[in-house]
Length: 357
Image 1: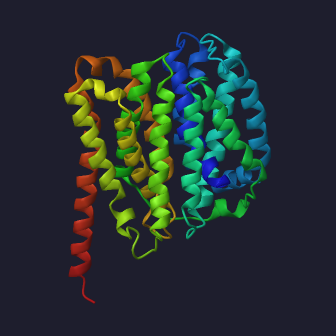
Image 2: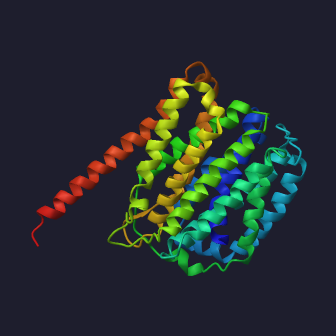
């Protein structure tokens, strides 16, 4: 579970927490302090996957002290935020929070590669990690910025993990998965709507907690179903094969219902359904990235597009109040990517059948 917590703490806790601070409590992009927040949120996930193998080995060799520094920095950064005090003009606050973010994304990325390079483990710990994430969002009802502390506490177990430097040098052929990235964008955009709608009314915390609890139930169902992923059958059993498609269908149904009845954005049923959809996404991502060989997925891009989805939905939240049907546009990239990948798979199957044995 420690590795899963390290892998999830950046996109689900740090990014959510910082975006709540920036959107609900304010940001000053007229100074350096505002732009510092952007570095760990958007730039670091783009740069990290492109670093050389030797840099990866160095990062893994120093993962424990880096995590320890992150925990200390996070404690300093969170202390003034505990009761919702967010100083949008504070350079010290932005430097501390962004420093935590850089360590958070690095350790999270190293944890992802560790999971990907050790296939075959059961996903039970994934459900536990999602349940812990839900606890921090439940506490957001009273301490709105506590997801940032949650990222710190989920980073702490990384100090005790064994990080093998040689795993960084293992070259794994992976395939691009535009559908999973577009689905992450779509689900993040929908999940964030309740936060942007309620704003300083932090009752959005239990709502998001409900979403992550139902996501944990999906991961538990995957475990109870005895899901195993193999090289030759990366999509089996059906729970893994259909999880991404089911997530898209569920999210689309939620979007249509919210477009027809905008007040549905505050209904707990909406968050529960989105949680089921997010559970389908995360089960698919963790299954695909643990597949040995070229069928594996690149998860860094998925987390990046999850963050972008949160940010974009925040930017357009006011417009969606005036034009509720506009939220259906968030689904278009996922639908297009799904149809494209399905067409690619069909053409690949036809070529394989046409090849002489």
